[in-house]
Each structure stands twice: as structure tokens, then as C-alpha cells.
Length: 126
Ligand code: HEM
Ligand code: HEM
Image (tube, rainbow, N blue to C red; front, side):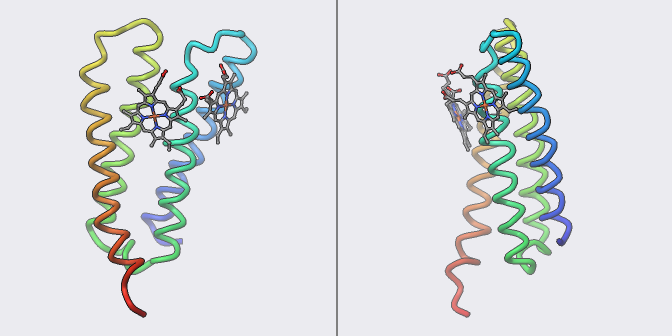
């Protein structure tokens, strides 16, 4: 696996371990107050990062580009900000909301960047 693919896969596994630990905590404590944090860590964290990892594994030449490295770091930083911000907010700290807003918009920007990276690669004639 080349480095962007490997980084995304590692990030995915870290999200899955944190998200499932939170799921277990919610189930054991019978307090589902962090459900949106768990849901996003699993779906937007574990599943999306794994999809990105396999995309760059399937298109290794695209993963060599600097823009792919930018995509990884923008996704990782905004995503981690989103999950931590959500956790802090749902723990009863609404003052964190501006951080959450910036992280959400950056996470969307990272997805937009992925559209520019991935769509030309998949539509390219062999
Ligand atoms: C150790 C394993 C897991 C535990 C203990 C666990 C626990 C939970 C709990 C307690 C809820 C809240 C349910 C509710 O309040 O209605 C929940 C929701 C959710 N979980 Fe998990 N979960 C686990 C693994 C996963 C995995 C592997 C995924 C996805 C890949 C996932 C995705 C979700 C999603 C998307 C929701 C929100 C569902 C909704 O919108 O109603 N969970 N989980
Ligand atoms: C820009 C990033 C995103 C923002 C701002 C966002 C925002 C939200 C909001 C406001 C809700 C409703 C929460 C509630 O009613 O408690 C929600 C629910 C949900 N979102 Fe997202 N979302 C984002 C990205 C994603 C992505 C990329 C995925 C999946 C790959 C996802 C999966 C879900 C799921 C499964 C739920 C239902 C579970 C729940 O109620 O917490 N979201 N999201």
C-alpha cells in the first residue's frame, strides 16, 4: 500500500477502535447521549477513511500526487476536530460550537477536494 492509502487505512482503524469503545460505553452505561459522536466516528470516520484508503490503493498514481497528501491531512484534521468537538458539545459544552462549525465546513471542503481528485481518475479512458 502506498503512503496516502496506508495513512487513511490507519486513521480508519483508529476511528473504529475509538468509536466502538464509545458504543460499548453507551450500551453499558445505558446513556446514549453520545450517539451522534459514535455514529459519525463509525460512518464518517471508519467507513469513509477506509473507502479513501481503497480508492488510493486502486489508483496508486493518484496517491503519489501532492493534492492527495493535502486531501489526507485536511480530512484527518477536520474529521478529528469534528469528532472531538461533537463529543465535547454533547458532554454539555455548547461553547465549542464555532470549532464544530469550522471543522464541519473543512470536512466538507475535503470531500469536495476528493471529488476533484477522484472523478477525473475514474472517468479517464484507459
Ligand atoms: C462494539 C460495537 C458497537 C456498539 C457497542 C455500538 C453501540 C451503539 C449504540 C448503543 C447506539 C445507540 C442506539 C440508539 O440510541 O438508538 C449505536 C448507534 C449507531 N451505531 Fe453503533 N455500536 C457498535 C458498532 C458500530 C459499527 C461497527 C458501526 C458502523 C460501521 C456503528 C454505527 C452506528 C450508527 C450509524 C448508529 C446510529 C443509528 C441511528 O441513527 O439510529 N456502530 N451504536
Ligand atoms: C459536514 C459533515 C457533517 C455534518 C455537519 C453532519 C451533521 C449531522 C447532523 C446535524 C445530524 C443529526 C444529528 C441528530 O439529529 O442528533 C447527523 C446525523 C447523521 N449523520 Fe451526519 N453530518 C456530516 C457528515 C456525515 C457523514 C460524512 C456521514 C456518513 C458517512 C454521516 C452520517 C450520519 C448518520 C449515520 C446520522 C444519523 C445518526 C445520528 O442521528 O447521529 N454524517 N449528521
